[in-house]
Image 1 (cartoon, each protein chain N blue to C red):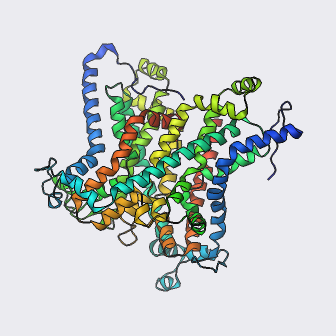
Image 2: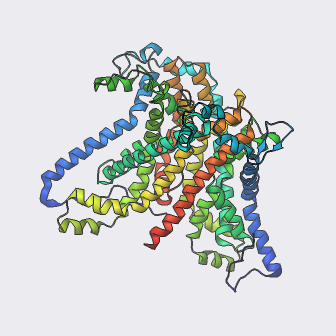
Image 3: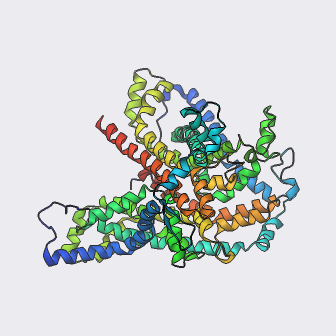
Length: 290
Length: 326
């Protein structure tokens, strides 16, 4: 995957330094303004989470609370089993990511580098379903899952996400870019197909795998609709549906809702900040789906 | 379906060797394909058939052919009776005003038509600004991307509060001279705007990244030549940047349109499709029917969505061919 530098832009002409300097200042003001607009809901969320409920809608707004009510953040853990929600979501997100990445890259190797009967037909099945939105087949899928006893289990959410056509497609596109001569040379050296996958393809596709891992992890962590349809028992709920329940049950405790929302954002923020380069470059180079 | 085996004469799978190869290949594909076939392929096919049944989850499934579709798209006679002058257009008007699927289609299309251009304008603007050589570009980029990765539930509840009667947005608007003092999501004309604002705000950073990559791919010589010819920045933008971005804009618009057709989370979390049916979307309607255990009808609505999405996808392929032929 091409590593692009995002900071390089048109050079500034030396003949109009003053105008350029002025332009820079305008540019920075614009940037800061846009960042503020982007971040303001989060700032408001943070500020409200440290207030008392009656202070949240004070007029005029007070961005910095008079007194910082940090106890809001300890209160939410007693009002809802947040820790359990986190645990459930982590189990689902990690398993989905592992299954998705392993099986996709495994299958993609065959689609990209091996020749066999029905290859194109099978791959066509994958391509065709990429265009079909999940919302179009979620109901038969739900009925199928319920009839095999997956309703209201974490396993349902895992299976739901783990075998997407998208992962296979992404990995196959990447593998096609790796020279076939590498595989043939390895074959002559006596490496089996599994060996070629493990020793040559996997190490070469680190960046594609990183992209897939982050996409799958964040997508699964933030998924709301799947868990909403499948999970009803408290003990299997994920963060998103758990937070939703918390909001419904404490609908006038604005400060606590904001505190719980803040907490729910932390894990994904950490993953995003740590791996944002792969995430953003993955989108930039392959223009992935939303 | 008959598929021709790939052409090359050398290395073409033959006999025992071919069988062994095929088996090895299938062993690679099997772990993913079994899951994929069971949990995606079968439901996709089943959805088409289910949309032609009447079923509430019990033991009795009834085949009703296209009846679900007919029911969805029929304007009830009692409405037509009340019309003074029933003609095609007045009945069509009724369809979009009174019939659930008509309202859902109208809302979905309205939402799409406003959200797509707004998101594109904002993401191009952000990309243009970030494309300049600035210090901290990576940090700014991460900030603007952040809404996209944050959980919809958390940001929707936050925006809901901000758009409340006495919330910060109305307070800000009051400073600017507006006298709107209702809760946005409870007002039938503003509710859809609440959903639009959040959708644009959440996804503009994502498309910004795509545009940023496209901007960096525009050859610098084009601008240099234009400067020599005396073109100002504005002319350069209209005559170089925008035309060069055209393939990206096309791709982005298709992704956005499909994403808008599928909207559910934001609506469900902010307005619940209301007030009344003011923000009822196609998927909201599907879920409503699903919750009412009308599985056949729910699938029929889902098929309407599928047809819309596939139409856009096919148009994309056609147009792309045309573009590359030019």
